[in-house]
Length: 244
Image (cartoon, rainbow, N blue to C red; front, side, top):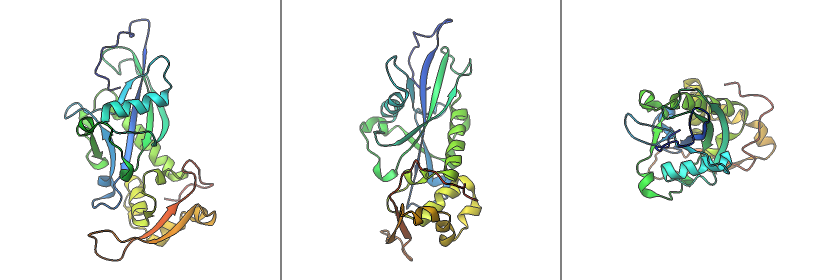
């Protein structure tokens, strides 16, 4: 957890409960490699990077605590973000200040819908590219929590529709491909547009994915990308996992 406060409740007889949140965004429409465009939210600073985290109050649900931790530590409003419990991290020595068990959470946000509620705090937060994560500078067991978050999202992308919680709506097929390539590598990045869309045939057949034409992007040359609009439930899942 990332709360820089004393832990008065923690003694030889008791333990505190915290939440830590792994937040992802994807920079749709921007230049860069897929792993440069896929980013995770960190707080703190060099040699002291942390995931947003806080202690859980006695009468506070985990989800509320996780969302409040994001507000307090990063200055962003996570009210409408996708949020899911990730895992529990309870190593005895995970926090040098006392016995603290953390309930990790996975959060997904859209870059074009980010809302700042505290600009001063948000200015100190870092949307760190996956390609540049400072693993050796993450405090406590946050490397383990972050790796678990990356693996969970990679898994969910294979069998569910959570990708649409990271993309604008409508979205370009080129961005959809880049998002999957960030987690599955160059073989996905080399797929043709038609092969990418073929993987989402069940959504097209059920009218949860609708063609949205081609959308030109300001300052970009070449043929405008093919776009689609997702109107289904992002918590839905596939009958078969992606073959990627």
